[in-house]
Image 1 (tube, helix red, strand yellow):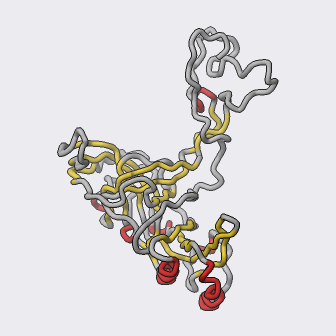
Image 2 (image 1 turned 90 degrees about the horizontal axis):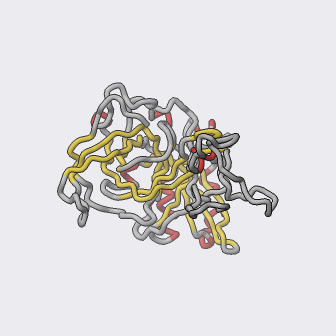
Image 3 (image 1 turned 90 degrees about the vertical axis):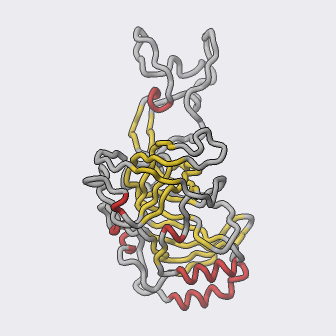
Amino acid sequence: MGHRKYSAPRRGSLAYLPRGRATHWSPRIRFWPRYEGPPKLLAFAGFKAGTTHSTIVDNRQGSLTYGKEVTFPVTVVETPPLVVSGLRFYEMWNGALRSVGEVWASDTQRDLGRAIKLPEKFNSDAAWEKLEPLKERVREVRAIVSSQPRLAKTGKKEPDILEVKIDGGSVTERWEFGKKLLGTEVKVTDVFKEGGEVDVVAITKGKGIQGPVKRWGIKKLKHKSRKTVRGVGSIGPWHPHFVMYSVPRPGQMGFAQRTEYNKQILRLSDNPADINPQGGFLHYGPIKTQYALLRGTVPGPAKRLVALRYPSRGIVEAEPPKLEQVSLASKQGA
């Protein structure tokens, strides 16, 4: 620490280096937890509408506020049904997953061609016959789902495409479960239940190019400092004769994929009148379809796609708390 009289902890985390923009504003789920039970989809996606606050009766055993009314922020995520546009099958190859083949629905979503190039006609029956001899090699079945932004208040037409794992039961049961889902719509109530917890995967707000004080949280220098105040006192010693990666430097901040764990689902509803503030949510508008009410905050601005994943270390099923009141004030930000 140079000639400091006292030592100090380093500023900022090096866990996500190199810091840079995400490749796309739609999140990509890279880890899938284990699930025991009948086959089901392990994730869903929706659009962040905004935040408000809610009052509930705390029903968590052992909590200091058990049985009392508590108020905390909640996030509203609009969850229009997803369309299962295709299925993809994987085998194990040299310790990693490798795609064996895929099947697409004969009648695809009309806007799907805005996101990817579609064949003029897809023969799903021929694709199933081609995959049948490879059934013994399949180890994972994943659904290719697409969102329906026209149903939500996002102002866009191009659907977002995600790959969602089908888990539970045997591989044969997952195969048959995916075959039934192909070409159909899936609702959020088919995947999650009220009271349980989910992991939220989303892209954070982008903040552009920022200096080291905002980007790394370092302390400003004294006002009589030479040349700069909002910078580091020294960028390193003479040797090594280069600036080390651990030195806080200015650069891109935000717009990075982050996962927040164990967000409790307080409500799953298809009645938007219960949650819409007067005039709708700021920068979003009124909710028109189903929605999920999550305890706490969620990364990203309004209208950003949010992936809700089966919890990797949380509570899957629990009794939902009693909602005493959800604020419908007109000035609710994102």
